Structures are given as C-alpha cells and as structure tokens.
Length: 120
Image 1 (cartoon, rainbow, N blue to C red):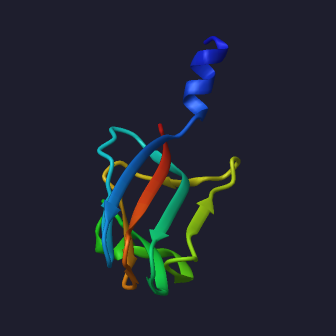
Image 2: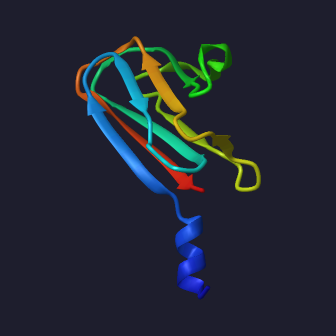
Image 3: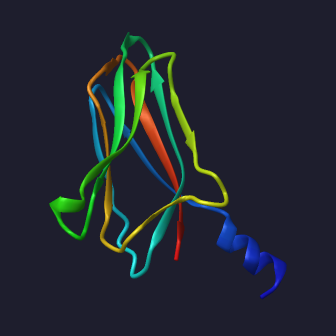
C-alpha cells in the first residue's frame, strides 16, 4: 500500500447532524465490521441553558450491554464539547452498535454535531 492508501485508513470519516433545542441523535453506521470513534464535537449557537451531554452505547448484542459511555457536564451555548479519542486506543464498537447523543438544554441558534470515525 502506498502512502496515500495508508493515510486514507488513518483519516477519520465524519458524520454530521444539525438541530434546535434538545439533542436526541443516534450515530449508527451500518458497517460490516467494527468501527472506532475518533472524535465527537458539538457546537451550540446563540443563547440558552446548560445541561449535561451524554453519549450512550446502544449495543447490537442487546440491552444487557447498553452503557453510558461519557458525560460532559454543563454543555450549551458558550460551552461546547470537543472529545478527542487517543490515537492508540480509540473506542471500538461492534457491527450494529449505535451511539446515542442526548442533551436537554436550549440553544436559540441550534447546535451541530460532528462525529469522526474509522472503519474496520
């Protein structure tokens, strides 16, 4: 494999979503193999309230393996989330797993989520 091919394996792909007020967004890529979370970013626009932002695993193996993965306290306008996973040990997930992003605050200008991931 040449350098460009190797680089394409290491550069995360991105999934994005936009919304207003509460966040209840599911990142659920349909991969035939594993996927790895590289980063999660949430930006809030305008004015509003702060609330905890959570990332939960909805496991393809069943609800017995669903788990709260991460909580960022007091996110909202002026307090974004920028979660970057270590290059050596990113979070890895099984085919069919889904990540649930939830936030119950308000943002007058809305919010944007970007999730970076690697396949395989």
